[in-house]
View 1 (tube, rainbow, N blue to C red):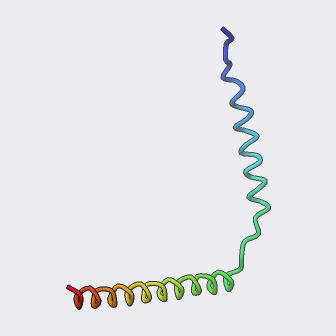
View 2: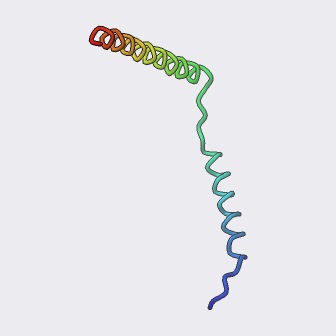
View 3: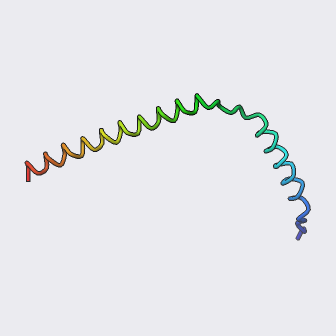
Length: 68
């Protein structure tokens, strides 16, 4: 059987982290105003969706109580 050397993993890990560092250098970070606007939009959408689900739940509950 052939022997498997553990020396092959060290260069792969080293090159992986070099590539990872290079990729982090290419990231374009958003500015603060854009992040605030997008976060606000997500929170508003979540609240609206929660209200819609709560309203549907309430209407279904009333409907089931009327039937039963």
